[in-house]
Image (cartoon, rainbow, N blue to C red; front, side, top):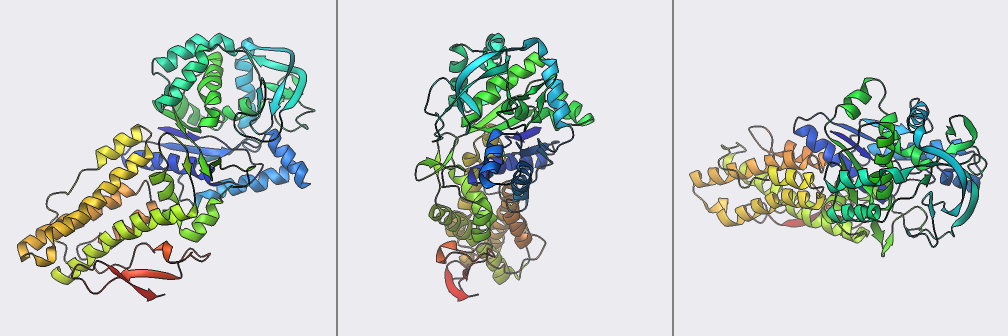
Length: 497
């Protein structure tokens, strides 16, 4: 499977909305790798945007300096967010990108022509609109533009796109977004501008082949990254021969990915992606989280304060398949405390305490599994529903905790106790496996706590964040440890440390 994310502009540092798409793609990549499938997970940055030029001008620094600095911040999300991407493309620096864009341009030459154009341009969207205001909420007024541009005969591909998307050969999920694209196509397509004057671009970008007075429109340039990053044999392996090519995109750029990009590929005679998975927005106080809104939560600062498990878990457990999700730190803390500290952490602690106390740490035979979650997780991820997939994993946590209360191993005879604790250890080990795509760091801690043939009482796997904001190290000022008052190790009491 070839999994890609959109490549964001680098006019500012990354925010939590970027982290959402990256974490979703990472879950898909880890899940399919775990199933033994070959995976390439690619992300990167769009360096050639006019937004980047204007941001550098506002800051009073060279464009290259700003682009390099902010692109490094995006690539640097790999460590804090536990990402496993295989390649990272920067469109201003990747050696194969410019020649690749030129090849796509030349392959579509039969559908390109020049004409004078007048329209209203949103710098925030890097898109023309017939009238204002910007439908995506950018507050800057639309700019009137009058110039000669290169145009692409998009109108030629309306019927082919209707057939591809309506017939399911190009899958767009969820259905609401697919219907949105189909409605857009049925209304008719106009040809689109695919260049801008080099003067308006301040000379930044990829020159149009044979016309140095124009630069390639940023979206044409950026969309091509999905193939230009695949050098040598990688192109044949991952674009021509790969059966599953999946783009993860936000709802604001669905038209570019589900209409413009496949039309470009049809024109060039190149293979199409197989699926476009669309997520909605993260908001804060009801407003889309964005660089320009002033409400952009810094994912690295959140990880530093609360830990990567809490951040990834909120993004996966709280964000719905359809509809925006409103973020607050309080919601992140509440979800982490309820699920990670109170649910999973408490379960592992209870199991290791009871195995140590009643069986001298020796792990009994596994017995019957408590619940089967592998297929429900897979089915949810195939449906691009991360919240449902995370919920399926959490169903096993809840089932195991209920099993403890139902069987009460500390009151059973030796044979019954061994059967119950064997089932619980098996459930915890299954959780470590199923949790890995979602929370790789936490899954490793669970696996370490319940692995081997003899268990020792484990330290708390997760701090209770609600006891006070964690210091910058990510470690809380105080943690809750298993209590001493119950035979199963359940409950907590405060200790310093």
